[in-house]
Length: 322
Length: 303
View 1 (cartoon, rainbow over the protein chains, first blue to last red):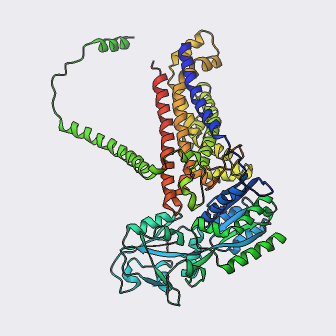
View 2: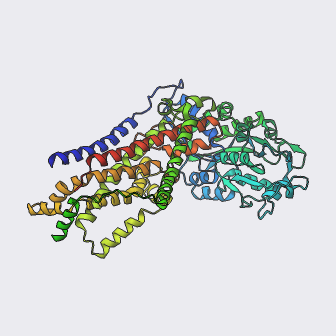
View 3: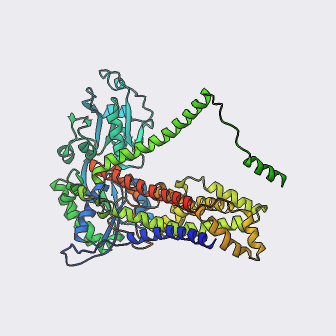
């Protein structure tokens, strides 16, 4: 009996030790190789959260920054623009990524908690409308046509309802989920009211789902940030958009000069005033702005124009003074 | 007595001859239907594994656990998911440390000490069974409101571990109770007959005999916690972190969260990395489940 009891105890302790051993493996810290040639070695945490569209930029910045300040732990979450501001305005995060400007209701929330912030434009984006490769008819859509498709209670279920010259092909719609800034921006620009959209489409926070959906159905139509189109250019067809001044194709150039109307947009980063008092946050933001070109390149986004860069630098200089 | 004797006789009697074999179409059809069901379940698992291995094949090497995640398109090739692996190990080890002692102690109380005819004990039992069916996201909301914000532990490893412990606690309790119940009453009676107290009986006879069953249940419960992503999304497991956790109050990410976020990235290379991470997660789960089976088979005792 004693033998078997011991046997069983061994089994349990073995199981426990396995867990313990695994933990021990896990606790070894990254070797603290000092990769920075800067005078001061900072440490601590910088918490970034918010838009999943801007997320890749902040991740790229965090990754580049790690080479300069190996001991500063920059974490990036992607709760969505709205979700990010909720955390930002109660002081849970230092930096908030946003794919649209802060809303009045969010401003009020931040004010109520005494959270002061600065707004910085870090990149450009062209919200791209895409259709299936086999779609030969939709070369260019006007804002009015897009509105007809996407407005609340829209009855459009077939391409020939958009334009009688279009073939009889059922339409399948894919779009952004309601917590994303992309959704807010698209609905505001196309439907004239933020958050107003038909609801019988496939909403997703994961743009790759939209890519797959549109790729998979001949009558598919979806919208997302330009980067997702660029990465999937071989699978999708880009639609030109006519915002009143003729058909314009989204591209780096048309997003930068704003001629891709009305769907070109700036991407924002909000920094909390209280967090800027922390040396590591200030240093990280400083780095982010100084290396914005490389950050944008690494994230494969549409870079800022020279003019925007000057504004950015000026705004940050202003920020540092206050 | 007579019944037992009759049973013994029945066992001793030679089995009836099995000469007449008739083919029953219904029987064969039913058997085929059952096999088909099994095949469907199995085919899905195989398809998942094959697809993930195929997609992540190029990334299934040491980079996966030696390298940190990256946010740079030019560095995707040398990226891994080390911080997610260590984050997962931290969270799961802590979950084990919190949920197993609590769960096993609760089970011992309910099985060995509590008077099951009392209404409050029955209410307790009903509640635990109901808790086992609560969706994990609800535990996430509770954790966010109560543990992260009111208690103020924030979005840390310990918050995640506490919430996952709450999540798997009912499973641990139920499995441990089953294991205790499987220990024959005669063992307890024999122990009492020799003058042992209730505590001595529980600690020296019942508990050791129930350990294999408990270990199996515990490992299965932890496997569930390991694959959980829904509550952790609420509890601030971050998308991108280049540091391994080093204390209870570290920020963290876990494998399921990392996979979920890698899949959302625009570049195809990130999705390959996600596939490799899926294979790793499946591997860990398979390893844990095999451990459960080995422990059960090796140490299980039949009375």
